Each structure stands twice: as structure tokens, then as C-alpha cells.
Length: 471
Image (cartoon, rainbow, N blue to C red):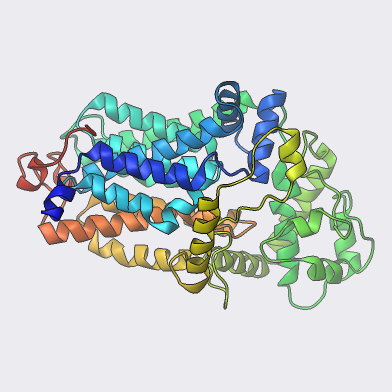
């Protein structure tokens, strides 16, 4: 009797409970340093490109309506719950709402959603895109393209995650030859990516060229850390001329000593910093300094490619939490805020309920005493699932998307935050559920008459009982 009652719960009731859980866990949206930078730029009206200015625009809308970050938080959790349901309804139609509920309640999935940052909204938009691309209606598929545009606009490296999704799942009409379908999908992905980058460029009032002040210097220091022996000052001094370096001797030894894996701020912030470069604010490094840093990066990296790759490999291992006795960094964000004066000045609440504190402590225990949050585990499972998913183009698209964005971190990561691996973790979880359910029900694909998606027809008995809308 109880099982029957649970099975008959209306989808929107189940989704509403999932949504309320995210509200209970996260409201009004936890702010980070990055979040405050977006809010401050939104209020000032001066947009930089240190982070995608499209996200500043969303903060501006939120500040003009609900005030502060509240609307951004509500948008990201609402889009996530809806996207999870739409995706699961297309992948595993029967009881899709319960699968979406389980996904939302899984700790490695929901913990990053409490924070107001682009890393929470991007997965929501990509889920909406997947659910839309698998719909029979063309106008819904076009909404999926809009969702991809939004994801790329708020997260620069989201183009990598979008590539497998668009190329493998988007089609203008059913029955297109795979060559035409793939060619058109490639054009759609490229056009959407360029449009998103152009949109951010149009919104940008002040380019900041932050690569020169952050990742470039981190790579320079990391490469020198892994170079055998010690390079003489006579070789390094001309390379560092004009870069804003604050030392004038023992370059290699002092850079090697100052380098910290996963923390480039150690090089550019604080009294012991090695370089004077702008990392916040609205004033970029001068052109001459940027040219000098770019030249030093090219010379050092190309002269010592092995050391550079060793540095990037160690950083990637840190991202995957493969270092011995380490756990994924900030997988369960604490409830403390390090800059209360900023919050007070911007009139943003940073206090949390007793329920939120208790829940966070419980999750923190799980994080530090299990492998549930380890990105390496999910990457390994994703790679192992690829052969099993060879007849499921939609699952391949999911796995490819998660792996693709994770691989960009090999070259782009300067910190090991768990949020960067969140989409890969999410894709792996959905792929596991989809393959297990399909194998148990002997179903190989969702409901369109597309042999490339597995050949299941709309009259398939498994699809016949699927809900057609949230109501």
C-alpha cells in the first residue's frame, strides 16, 4: 500500500519537495568573494571580464527585484530541479520525478548549489539543454540552444561541456542523415559559443586580462618548481624584466620556495608576494607589463615543456583529489564568511539558520570520512561506462560532456575547488542511473524514433506510462 502511494505521488509534488530542500539548505544563497565581486560590479554599472559579465547582469536584475543575491539563488535552484526532471524524463521516463528527486538529494550534487556562483547555474542550464534537445518539438530544441548560450555566457569553459551535448543530441528534424545532423549541430555549437563570447564582450566595460596576473604567473612558478637544477639569475633576470617582479636576485630559488600548489595568490598577494600585479578592482596591468609576462610564460614553458606538464599534472591530480591523504577541496562549503565588513557594507545577509549549520556539520563529516566527494572516483567510473554506453548516444553525450570540461582543468585550473568537477560528477551519476534502469527494463534509449539513439519507438511500453508534464 505504501509503495503504491509513493509511486502515485504527483511529479510536481515530488519536485516541490526537492526544491524546498534546496531552499532549506541554501537560502538566501551563500555568498563568496566572487559573488560579492559580481554584486559590486552590478551595482556600480562598470563590468569587467574577470568573470563573465553576463553573470553581473543577472546579479543586477536580482538586485533590482529581490535585492542582493536572492533571485540568483532562486533561479539556479529552480532551473536545476526543472532541468533534472526534464532530463530524467527523457532518459528514464518511468518515475522520472523520483530519479530527479534522488539526484537533487545526493550530497555531492546539492552541496555546491547552496552558493551563489556561476558553477551552480551552469549545470542547471546544461540539464535544461539536454532535456530540450531530446524533446520531439523543434521550438523546445531551440530553447535548448538558448540554455547552452546561457551556460557558455556565464562560465567561460562551458563550451567544452556543451560540445558533446550539442553535437550528439541536437537535431533540426527527426530522420536526418547522421552526417547532415552532425554537421548542422557543429555549426550550432560553434555559432552559440561565439555568440556567447561576443555577448560578454559587448557587456564588458573594462577588460582585465587576468590571465597575465594569475594563471600565467602560476604556470611560470610551477614550471620553475619542476625544473631540475637551478637556473642562473643571468638567464632569468632578462625574462622577468618588466613583469613587475619584486625581487632582483636568486630568482629560481625564491620562486620555487614561494610556489604553492593550488594557490596562485601566494605569488601575487600579501607582503611576501613576488609580483605586483592587479588581481582585483577595475584597473588592468599595463600593456607593457602584460607583454613582458606573456613573453616570460612562452619562453619558460616552451624551454621546459616537461617541467610545465609535470606542474599541470600535479595540479590536475589536486583537482581530482588524488594526492595522498587529501579530500576534494571545499566540497562542503563552510558557513563562515571571511569578510563580514564587505557583507555589512553591501547590506547582504551572511548568517545561517540552525538547520543549515547542523546539516553542514553532518555533511562535513561525510566529506572527510568517505570517498563520496572524490572527483577521481567519478572520472574513473565515467571512463569505465563509455564502452557500456556505446549504443546510447544520449549517455555518451553526458559522459563526454563531463569528461570534456574536466579535461580543460588540466590546463586551466589554478585551484582545486570541488565546484569545478561538479558537472562531471553530476553527469556520471545520471549516466549510472540511466544505464542501470535501461538494462533492468531492457530499454536502450529515450522516446524519439531515432535508430542512432537506440531505436526505441514512441509506442514502447516503458515510455507509454511516462508523465507528459510536471502536473
